[in-house]
Each structure stands twice: as C-alpha cells, then as structure tokens.
Image (tube, rainbow, N blue to C red; front, side, top):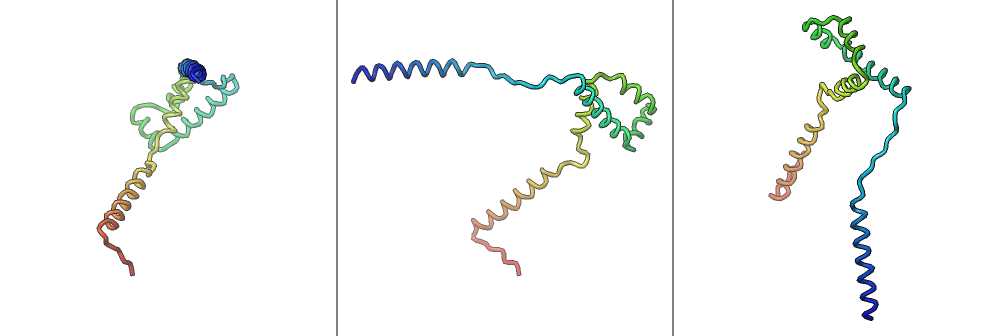
Length: 129
C-alpha cells in the first residue's frame, strides 16, 4: 500500500514537471509568404482604393485648396512604396464617415432594458390599448 502511494507521488511529480516544462513553450504563428504576384495584386487593389477616395468631390476640393493638382497627387502616389500604399489604403478602409451606429443601438437597448427592469421590480404594468 505504501509502495503504491510512493509510486503515485513520483508519477504526480513527474507529471507536474512535464506540464511545467510544456507551459514554457513559446507561441509560434505561421503565415504564407507573399510572392511577387500577390504583392502586385495587393498594390493594384490598394491603389484602386486610394484612387476611389481621391475621386471623392470633397477630397478633390480639399487637395486643390491645399495647392495640389491631380497630376501632383498621382506623381506622389506613384512614388510611395508598397508598404506605404497598403498603409494608406488600410487607413482609408478604416474610415467610417457616417459612423457604424452600433453604439446607438446598444445604448437604446440598455435604456429599454433598464426601464423594463424598473417597472418589473416596482410592480408596475404598462397597458397599451
């Protein structure tokens, strides 16, 4: 009986040691390495995104007010590296001019829930006829 307890204790210690060592394994992430064709497609898509934003009437007027012509903007756009073009395109995609409205919907639901809870706990009833 004592032998079994000692053996179980040794097995438990070994398991603790193994699990402790396994918990220190670094996290590894893998991804595909983009090739030249993928990079060219990505740049084309990013440039299209930027061009659509530049075609906006308000953006064009603002650039003209700052003293930039359409040719100057296109020249500067052509001088950007792939990473810079991708960064600008991501920033343009992240813009949400009208807002997403999720915050307003959540706020309305919270207010309605609070009103319902207050009415329920105060034993009041709303009757609509």
